[in-house]
Each structure stands twice: as structure tokens, then as C-alpha cells.
Image (cartoon, rainbow, N blue to C red; front, side, top):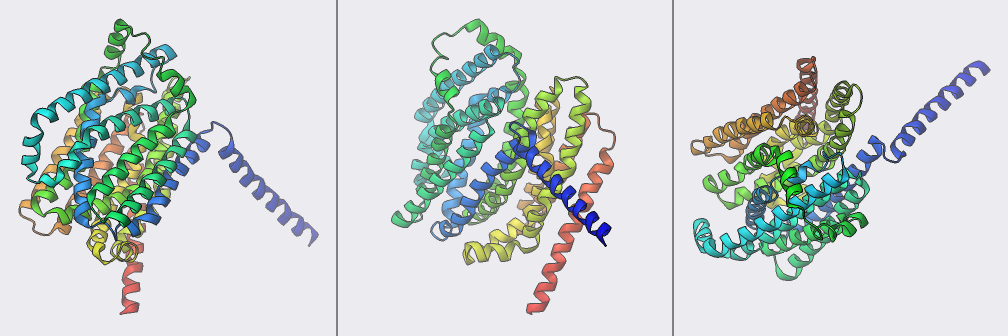
Amino acid sequence: MRFEAKMKIDLLKDTIQGILQRVRSIMKKGSFMQNVSLSIFGNGSSFIISFLLTPIITRIYEPEAYGVFTLINSITTNLSMIVHLNYAHAFILPKSESRFLTLVQLTLIVIILNCILLTLIYWLFGNQILAFFDDQTLKIGFLLIIPFVFLSCLGRAWSSWNVRKKKFRQDAVAKFVSALFAKGFTLTYGIHFGGYYLGLLIGEMIYKMATILSLSTKEIRSTFFKLFRKINVKDLKDVAIEYKAYPMYTLPANWLDSITSLMPIYTYTYFFGGQDVGYFAMANSLLNYPMQMLGNAFATVFLQKAAEVKNTDQGLKKLRNITVELYGKIVLVGVIPFAIIFAFGDIIFVFVLGNNWASAGNYASAMSIFYVFALCAIPISVLYRILNKERIFMFAKIINLIVTMGVLALGYWVDDPIKLIWYFSIATGLLNIFSAVLSLNFVQYKGIFLLILKNVLLIIVVYGGLYGVRLLFLNLIN
């Protein structure tokens, strides 16, 4: 008996030591797990704030207001990519600090000049642009687009700067503070002035400004004012040539990716009207929270780690190992939340957001299919930036756009918006599997088929199991 008791005590000690070792690995300053934990905290805190306040906000702002807000944001997203020419995405790559700062100079100059150009274009053709959308109530919203673009580009640059410096804590704080201020204002505006779309837009403006202020570390603030004291045109030209793949291939690829993700908004606006756009936008925004919390957190830290590993001995082998490990494990983290939405989306949306948003729950159930595959594919897709595969990345995005346009064109014949979103979700889910295959091929992994099949089967089993629970639940209450 004493021997058995001693064995149990030893087993308990080993278990506790194992747990403590895992905790220490997470808490170790600068470790991969600590950086991931910080990123998840930032994204997660933003998600919690939005999740808690969204049910109140959606009872103030109607689906039509969300439709207009989404249209303005979609235009901003596309213009932002063009304005900074994607140079900010290359901040992780320069080996010397002087080269990096020259790249920052180039990026800021490009942002300022292109924003001035956009202002001139809107001054000359603003009325024609508003006439195209045939809605003069959008005038105020369109006036905010250029400030939105400038702030978005500056935020992208500051975020990339912090990733290079491994300032993941700063990024986490920025997301928390920005979400708190933005959602707080949106709620306050709606209570006092009603559910006009302007409240959503000003809230977004506050979010972008708070993000920039929160991301502005002491190093960024002190360096920023020194950047323009001396500008060497030759160095700027050399850096522009060195990273020309970003405006030539990464910019078109990311722009195509953005257009692809926004195609449902334009399609639903044309075929079904503003209310269905609002339903889609709400479902998309809520599903995007776990994507931001998990997918983008892993992608940000993985990008920095991959760039670091690549330049070591046996860099490709180490890169392959961490890539396969990440792809195999991230599905375990994300499959449950998306499967719950798949099975109970309509019930959850009515309970949380109110009866007006029941249709948004049906959209979310369908969209959970492509979101779970995107969660697996997006974190490792950053490999193209590390391994100089920008051209392949661009051609892959062209294929994505063609397939997405082809599927959404069925809206001409399909009168049911829910049925169309199912077609769209299945097609984009397959495209994300294709993206994962490309990324795994970049690191020359030979077991691609089995790894993909394992993840797909896991997703099918979990989704099917939870949908079976739904059917059982409905039978019991009926």
C-alpha cells in the first residue's frame, strides 16, 4: 500500500512539474509561445469587448446601417493596399537597421503621395462617384474614406515595425485599447443620436486612431521625427528595387485577395439589396473574431519566427518542421468554435443579437465551412514572403478570384441568398485547402496528402457530430 501511495505521489509530482514546465515555456520572455499568447490576448480581449457590446449595438443599428458601413470599409480596404504598395509587409526582411529605416522612409513617402493623389481624384470626380452608387446619403461616408486610408496604412506600418522588433505586447495592448474606445463610442453615439451609419464610421475612425497611438512605441516616436531629416534618394531607389516584388506581385495578390473576400458584398448589393448585405456583414464580422484571435495571432508570430529560422543552419528543415507542426495543431484549436456556429448559428444569433438578425445566423452557419479551412491555411501562407514566392502567390490569388466570381455569378439564376452563400462557402473552403497545399509544398513537405486528409476528416467528424446534437436537441423540444 505504501509503495502504491508513493507511486501515485511521484506521478502527481511529475504531472505538476510537466504543467509548470509548460507554463515556464509560455512565460519565458521572447519565446514563441509567449509571443503567441500575447497575440491571442490582444485579439481575444478585442473579441470579448466586441462580443459583449455587439448584442446591444445591433439593437440600435439596423442591418441597412451595417450595409453602408461595410461598403465604406470595403472601399477603404482596397485603396489602403494600393496606397502603401505593400512595402510595409517587407519590414521583417532587411538584415541591417539602416536598410530597414530606409524602407520605412520609402513606405511613408509613398503613403503620403498616394493619399494626396486620392484627394485630388475625389475633388475632381467625387460627384460622378456618388452618382454611380445613386445614393447622396453616402456623401459624408465617402468624405471619411481618405482619412481612413491614411490611418489604415500608418497602422499597418507601425504594426509591421513592432513585429520586426518582437513588440507583441504592444500590439496586444493596442488591440484592447482600440476596441474599447471604438465600441464604447459607437454605443454612446447610437444611444444619443440613433442608429445612423455615421456612428459606426466615427467609431471605426476612433479605432484606427487609437491603434496608431497605442502602437507608437518610444522607439517609433523617437525615430519617426529623425526619418525625414536626411533623405538619400539613391538609397530610396536601391531599397525600392530590392523589394520591388512587393508592389509588383504581393500588392496585386493581396488586392485580388481583398477583392475576392469582398465579392459577396458587391454581389449581394447587386442581386439582393442592402438588408442581405447587412446580414452577410454581421455574420462575417462575428466569424472574423475567432479568425483574428487565433489565425492572425499565429500568423504574426509565425512570420517573425520563420524569418529568424530561415537564416540558421538547416533553415529549410527547421522551417518545414514548425510549419507542419503549426498546420497540424491549429485545427484542434479552431474546429470547435466554428462547428458550434455551423450547428447552432441561427439559434445563437437570435439569442445574442435579437430576432432581426435570425437570417445572419443562417449565413454564419454556411460561412463557418470556409472559415475553418481559412484558419488552417492563413497562418502558414505567410511563407511566400519568407521564401520569395510572391509570383506564385499572385497566380494563386488570380485563381481564387476567378473561382469566386464564377460561383457568385450563380446569383443571376439562384434567387435564394442563403443557398448562394452555401455554394460560395464550399468553393472557398476548397480554395483554402489549395492554399495550404501550396504553402506546405514551399517547404518541400512530402506528406501533404495525408496531413490535409487528416484535418479534413477531423473537421467533418466534429461538424457532423455537433449537427447531430442539434437534431437531437430539436427532436427533444418538439
